[in-house]
Image (cartoon, rainbow, N blue to C red; front, top):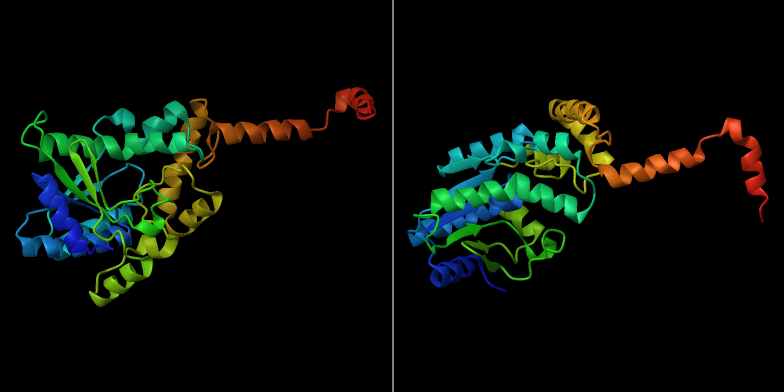
Length: 276
């Protein structure tokens, strides 16, 4: 089990990054990781900055929390949206409808809302030239005991082209992170405490109706944004609600159709029921 300092030192020694980014979503793991990493990098004399992705469908309070944390600790912060408006959440929903609970839908949302913005930032704002063979170190708050739920990480460091993904808190538990925040008096994200999610992305893939009910209760303004978008999506020919997706919606509609009373075909239904 490697300590955060060793993970950071080995990643820097092996890949010699031209830039180090602390990825902060607004969740407590990412903030814990940023605080630990910032202290270690400062001791090492390695400059860094915080990166936060604006998914265009987050709870505003989460982004405000990230800004507050960075101002509190005097961390430089960069916030970026998807570079092309066709990848903004409203554009995607109007064209394809709300995403459903499938891996493909989640991958599409991830690429559009998060990956493309980060890729552009790394390529055009971190490297000295887009074509240079330079590495950028991305320090994340992914932990081993939840990696299967996320992306299947099995090691704390991995390379993806110019991006070196590393998680200094890979071997910490959720309790470890909570204790660290308490011991260091790190402010907590109210969204995370109220809804158990970081709140930076509400795309709806793998989300449930119960979560939308919580959103309506705690953050009605954000829920209203989604409800208004649903009305626009229906007019665009994509009538299924948030969190469902076309496949699940069509399954439910088919089930409803089968249970409808066919008042003008009672005789046919009756004959069919006695075929056995």
